Structure formats: C-alpha cells, structure tokens
Image 1 (cartoon, each protein chain N blue to C red):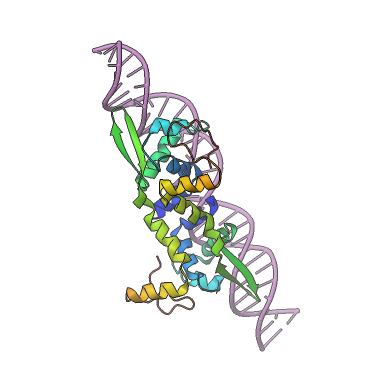
Image 2 (image 1 turned 90 degrees about the vertical axis):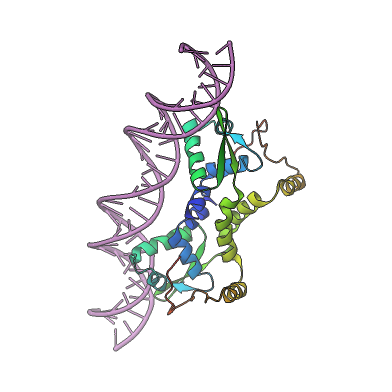
Length: 114
Length: 114
DNA sequence: GATCTATGTAAGATATTGCTTACATACTCG
DNA sequence: CGAGTATGTAAGCAATATCTTACATAGATC
C-alpha cells in the first residue's frame, strides 16, 4: 500500500494512470505524451507503476502494452474510506470484527502501530 | 494534492493521522506512540502533515494540539474516485462540464497534463 | 542475416527524505 | 526570577528518487 500511494503521489505517474485507465497503450505511445521528458524516464515510471501493482503489462510483438489494474488502488482507497467514515461507523466495523478500535488518547491498549 | 498524497504515503504519518482523526492530541502524546523514533522525527512528520494541509495545530499553553483536517484529503479522494468511476460516468461528467474527456489513444487533443 | 524499431537497463549526477543529536524558544509553576 | 516541561529548528548523514545519456536486447522486415 505504501508503494501504491507513493507511486500515485507523482503527477507524471498519475497522468500515465489516466492514459491507461480505459485501454491498453504501448510504452512508446505513453512516452509520446510527455515530450518534456526522456523516454527512459517514462519507462522507469512505468516500472514503478508495474512494481506497485497499479498497472499490468503484456507483450505484443515488439511492443509492450500497459493497462491499469483496478485492484492496485484498493488499499489506498480503503485507507481514505477509513479516514472519512465517522467515528460511529468505525466503532461498528470494529465491533463486527470483534476488535477494539485504536485508543484515541492515552493509549493503554498498546497495539502495534500500522 | 501531490503533497497530501506524498504525506499519506508514509506509514508513520498515516498512523499519526489515525491518532488525531477523532480528537486533538498534543505533540508529545503523539510522539509517545512511536517509542522507536526520536521526538524530533515525529515533530518533523507533524510539520509535513501540517504543511500539506492534512492536520491543523492550535496552541494550548505549553503544548501544541494537532487534529485532522478532513478537507486535506479531498483532492486525493477525488483522484481515486475519478480512477474508479467507469468510462460512462466520466463521459457524462465531462459532458456536463462541456469538456471533452482525455483522449485515450493517439491524443490529438493535446491537453496539458495535470 | 542485416537493419530498423520498440523498449528496457546501467551508470552516474543531483535533489529530496527521513532520520539523529544538539540547540533554541517559550510557557508554567514554585 | 529560575528551574522544569513541551516543543520546534538546525546541522549533518545515509538512503532513495528522479532525471540524463549511453548501451543492450529482441521482435519485425526487407
């Protein structure tokens, strides 16, 4: 999840994600959208996106076609949802998991962070 | 938005966000949750979170109380929603804005990225 | 097979992070 | 006021990111 969030924190990589969101695109086509940047730089961004699970690749003859992986952002989205949901919803969810939610203040319940 | 996503990409900072999500917490109390890390390190994380708009501070005598800023993650959440929504929904949203959605392939519509 | 085209990888320069320890600032309380 | 408490900032260091140019690899095509 760290990796996915880190990957998505970069504006170039977000732009790439938008490009490959609705269909496959070859590495060269993607690089063509970033004239101010060298092709290897884009290739390295593609590697970062692949490694973090945000896109997937497949070979097609000479070329390599990239496309978005929906699941790649799942944990990140879950974190945002967790932050956004109100306290009651989280208490309820915690109860359903038969856990106690994180202590807000002094924290006698020493849970490992993260 | 970059800043917020970058901030949230760090596990320590996410843990801090969870701590201050439901109420105010003093810097020292927060640092107390991270015994493996020096207090200044936590202070620097708090600065990063403040600068990126994810938390806000207020002075209280000696101490400084931090709490979450809901709006801080808005753009990040909007990006995830944009990625997640299906093509049809985006087309519709674009039509309502009287814009054209990003070209998926060859890109004659050269929009500035980002 | 020779050459072109598409793409990744290596090496290296530079900037940025994320810590640490030492120090500065400022409120509090006797 | 002076000691104590809470906290931020500075300096410095090791690790990592993000580019660049040069090179390697491999499928396509004549």
